[in-house]
Each structure stands twice: as structure tokens, then as C-alpha cells.
Length: 108
Image (cartoon, rainbow, N blue to C red):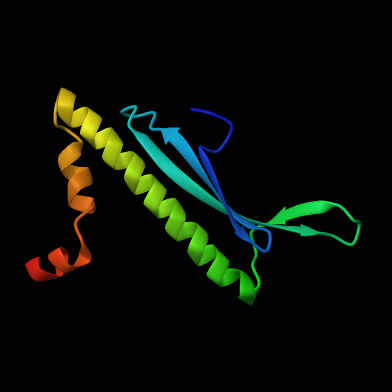
């Protein structure tokens, strides 16, 4: 779909989450991936990126992944609403994912 993320969440300390929109080659159904990156300035005075994290990065990763999750759910909900207007195929699956945890606990 694109070579740029649809959303970048900066969580401080050089930690960021990039949300990518992709399309399945099987059924053209869009889906999202998230990459978590930490930027740092090396001994060569250049900026580098890594996918390893320090202890103090973990709360930042938690923040970024929660924001990414919320964004993806909101996008999938909008897609579901649009598809429901046309054929209803995806909306029920999205709405089921959005039920509060307390409702799910009562069922099981």
C-alpha cells in the first residue's frame, strides 16, 4: 500500500512505533503491522536504530503499543462500518473484537 507508515507514535527516549497498512495477496483484505524502534546516537556521532531495548524503554514500548492497538482497532472499526453498509461481511467480526473484557468474561 505504501512505503511510509500510516502512523508513527513517538513515546520518548528514542522509542517509536510505526504502524503499517498492508494488503493480503490472498484476498486483498487490509491488515496492520507494527514495528517498534529505538533510535540512539552512536560513538560515531551518527543516529542509528535498533530493536533491542533497555529497562527504561519498556514503559515507553507499552505506551506506544497501546496507542498503536487503539489506532488499529479504530481503523478496523471504520472499515467494518463501511463494509457493513455495502455487504455486512467484516463488521460483525470487528464489533465482536471491540466488546469490553467484562462482557467477554460473563460469557465464559
